[in-house]
Image (tube, rainbow, N blue to C red):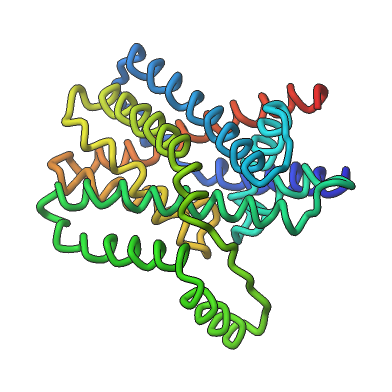
Length: 291
């Protein structure tokens, strides 16, 4: 298990450093920032990462896996950079592998992790419908978000659709896929903390926006969840690199923000979120000795 943790730790850090190396920091040369609002944005961002760990713990406890908040923070934060490794498997399996012991089967923990991530993604899609409908220039594409949301809900709750999807997947990819079964009760029990977690990140992004642009309508902040869910389903792009930035840029331009400012904000948002990931990572390292 120690070897797995080390592979996760060093592999994700290498992937992260490669990403940071390719960032264009020249774009921030003439950027004017209101540091008061930027500070507030970081408070909401960091709180959101703590809530993400709490959500993971709630999910474990709902499945009768007793985990302390320290274990949840450690397992959640230590694998945060694995999203920069191509593919999504380590993001889901990483925290499960860390919590595995004689009383906790890896397969069961992985299914719990997958369930929570699916609910997080599903709620992100629901939240993303609003900003797309609100923005006149891209509202015609709202049907895509609504369709994806509907399909995801069906995939979560329809056993028949799950079996069809698994058969199609297994036939085309020649690999076994077993989707976790989620009840309406489980969805409702987890949705509360995940919605609060989303709200903190949306609020944080809003304060990040106004720290750069000055006051703008609050719904501009919903560019963030839209970019996250699109990044999550873009499996071939590690960490949603490029996809998230493109979504934020397109959304802001469609709402009247100039192209150069929109691009700057999209890259700035990635660095801002990286700071949150570093916060979660170092918090995890702190709790590593206490688990």
